Image 1 (spheres, rainbow, N blue to C red):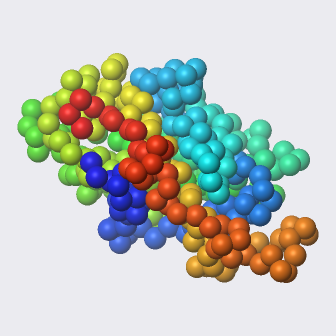
Image 2: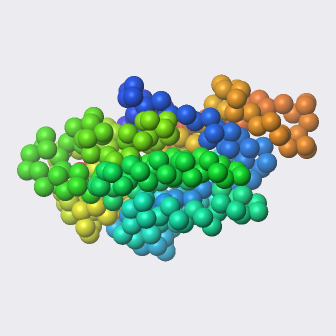
Image 3: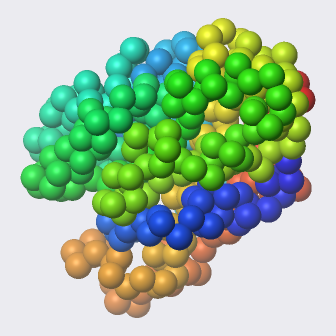
Length: 312
């Protein structure tokens, strides 16, 4: 794919910019990003998900630091990166989002409120619509009672049932992720709550739709070139984890850049740190100078290393 040569295009694809039904409210996320930048501290993230997020199929429990959570943090410490991240993997094996809301209780009353963003990576176990839609709405409602409310980002993959349908197809059309991406409301339990509550999201089905050879049979266990697996059909490999990490890092960097360049002045925190004087006003050159091209450019050693299958 040429997406790595064109990060802005990659961003449009990952955010489903074509989908008029999605109008994410990124205000809170931008505000928290700029606060972390001004305070010169890492942006603090936790990831919720099942065994795929733990790293099964790629790097079990992150022993080799190849899961998307570790790769995301590592990307944020490349030379010149304006956004440093501290990412904690809170995934639990064989769970759905409805079973994992309790893990956030330990963060709610922390004295230092050390949480900026919750990334939800639970699509694969969200085959039961009613309970998982309720869980998404409960998550948003519950966070409103926090003294410091963290932002939420949903990273949508394929549901378990959708993977079975795609991998069992004997035709190229039946394996095409574009058909799935175009109709997420039909199979993604979280899509409607994301749309109704204006929650920011990134979509791997849309990324998969833009990959080459996407309908060709693969040596993957699930025969899907865009979701390469060595084990069970739904435990994707490290290439997919890498794409997840790059997409999230690119998206957060893009939002920080927008906030810092004053595209939405509502993101400016009222309580600026006292050690920042008026002559050091926020400008793109002083605090937030950056280019989203830096981290995905094919001209640099940072590159875009993800390769998700033998035919992709």
